[in-house]
Amino acid sequence: MASQLSDEELYESWRAGSQSAGNALFDRYFRAVHRFFLAKIDDVTAKTLTQKTFFTVVKKRDTVTIRTSFRAFLFKIARFVLLAEARDRSRNPAFCDFSVASVAALQTSPSQALARREKQKIVIEAMRQLPIDEQTLLELYYWEGLTGAEISEVLEIKHTTVRSKLSKTRAKLRTMIGKVVRGEGDVEQLYAKSEDIIRSMTIDPQKDS
Image (cartoon, rainbow, N blue to C red; front, side, top):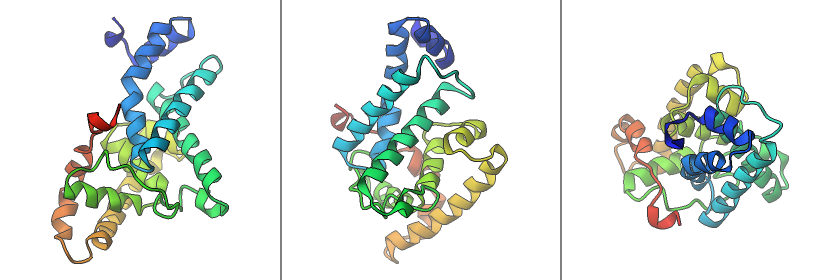
C-alpha cells in the first residue's frame, strides 16, 4: 500500500510511471504546502501557489533526482514559487531578497485559516515580521520536522549554520512578539510557549476546501 511506502519510494515509483504513487505523494503533502503559503499570503493566492508548486514538481519529475529528501525538494520548489510571486508583486528588488525582506514588508494579506486563537495570532504576526527565510526556517523546523540537512537544502544555506541560525531566529522572534503586543501582553510567557503555539497552528478544514 502507498501509505506504507516512503516518500522516496513513491517518487521513484511515480517516475517509473505509477500515477497512483504520484497521487499518494500529493495527498501526503498538499496540506503542508498549502500551510506554507497560508502563513504568508491570502487564501486565494495560497491555493494558486500550492497548485503551481505541485505543477512544477510534475515538470521536474523526470529530470530531478532526490538529493536529501522528497520533502526538501518539494519545499525548495515552494520557496522558489513564493519568490516568483514576490517579484511579480514588487518593483523593489530588495523586497525579493528573502534573507532580508519580511512578508509584512511585501504588504501581503495573510490568511486567517491558521491562527484562530489570540496567542496564535500574536505569534504568527511576529513571525511575519521576520525575514521570509527566517519565518520559513521556523515553519520547516516546528511544523514539518525537517532535519538540518533538509532545511539547508530548502534555504540554500550551509548545513553547519542551521542550528545557530535557528537559535538566532528564535531570539529575534521574542523581539517581534514584544513589538506585536506593545506592552499589552506577557511577552516572556508568550515567548516561552511560542514553540507549542507554532506547532498548534493547523489549517482549518473548513478553509481548506
